[in-house]
Length: 134
Image 1 (cartoon, rainbow, N blue to C red):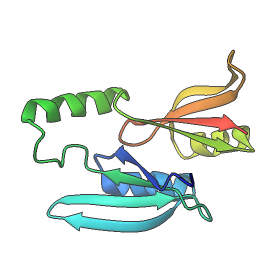
Image 2 (cartoon, rainbow, N blue to C red):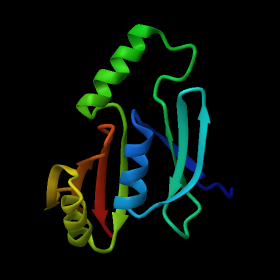
Image 3 (tube, helix red, strand yellow):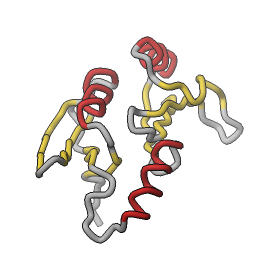
């Protein structure tokens, strides 16, 4: 079977802040930016890699109730709604760049008992972004 990951989805609550983080801080390219009424879906990804992240309005589905929208907003604010794990050859360099850009540090680079070295940040919408040392 030949299956690959094409895209994954992360919510955003501020399209411009999301673009600023993923493009300007992480260095991803913006591949698509689609608006519909007052909502925006932004597709970003690492240059030269076919996988994409679709940054989407979290409660755009018309089947979501107002109570569910409130819960989603609360979970995003706590950073417990969505997460993404990235990898780099230079964890310390990436960490320094994220700190210099004002990233919200959750965990400084550390060796984990399960065998990896990583750090963690929150993006502007509260999503947990872990970065592993390759």
